[in-house]
Length: 326
Image (cartoon, rainbow, N blue to C red; front, top):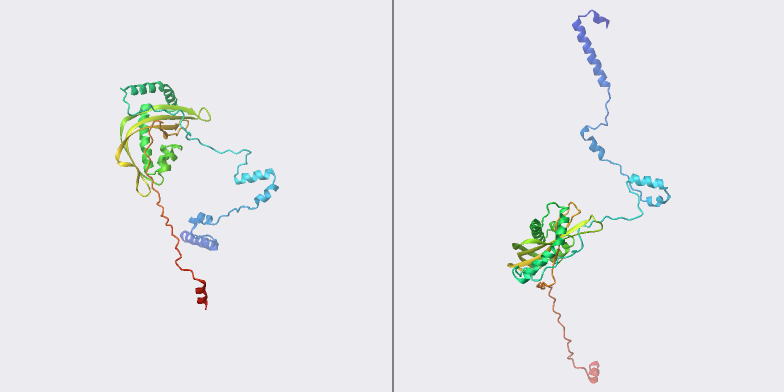
């Protein structure tokens, strides 16, 4: 600018700054913006996810698979994440409980009625000591998996499991019941009580529970070990069972009974998450038969036989028939 040489320095600087601002303003007006840009860019990702491309399956793939080469079949299975087929069929199996009681304990006859001071009670004590050697070997085997296992403390734990299982049965809490009983014992406890209402109460222990029998066995291989411990309970309980109509069919909620039971508890020792659960109850042969329950049935409607009605009309004679026609 030749005219700016004769002007004062302040005026020239002001004019120079104004010219720069005007130049920048003109450049800004010349910039063209995109009109396709959304006014709210914060949800751009969500708007993109509104429309997704879906790969439709080819329903005629089985017709063309015979024409593919092994390499093409392998690449297609790898693309779809499918494992190649095997020539054998394997299915996983879990053995969480045994199917019976191995070497069951045989309760002595008259148990719970004979005193240890009598001749019969002394014989029972001697038989119990003679059979204790195998149980001690089994307890030693259990301690190799559980360091803190003790028959005296386990009897109290078994009684807590026994009470918890029966309370869950009364309340029909089958999730808790599965944690307290094995797969063998569950249908035995629940089958006859599906349509019934049960009232059970544990009153007290007449004798402290004690372990009378213990056995260990292996299934399939030597490391898969199961243990069964038989515990004797002498308790006082009340039991009342009502049918679906609310009628009492067994027991009483008022009358308490003394009960002697031999309950088998089982645990999968090889499983680090195994639990002691009720497996079965030993019922000796000398025990008297249990009182049968009073079952109710639907009363059938009486069938009334209708008697044939006799014909009281007098048959007409031939002369009367001809007279009526005339």
